[in-house]
Length: 124
Image (tube, rainbow, N blue to C red; front, side, top):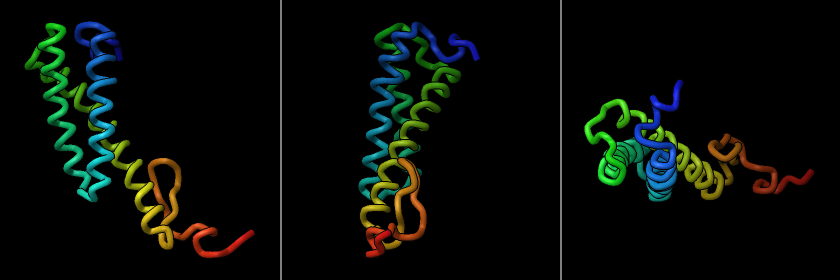
């Protein structure tokens, strides 16, 4: 994959608008959707809307192409991925914290059935 298939105008433009602004917004959107116990589908819908906003910022600030399906899909795929990571991160934390007698956190993005030893009172 060449950089020109992902970056339309410049690397700085892509980093500022897509990665930092859009990516940060997507991460926090995914976390807030999970925090309010809404379904994952809403995080994807909001990431699609963020993709439209990011595409508009590329157009308005850096003379990018507004109606470019290729770059819209590229930006939106990145935003959906970050929204998904934010959603899973928050949901894993919620499941382990609120349902600690049933689940334990398994890494930053998952949980497993089976309470932790500390929660069930067992000591090694």
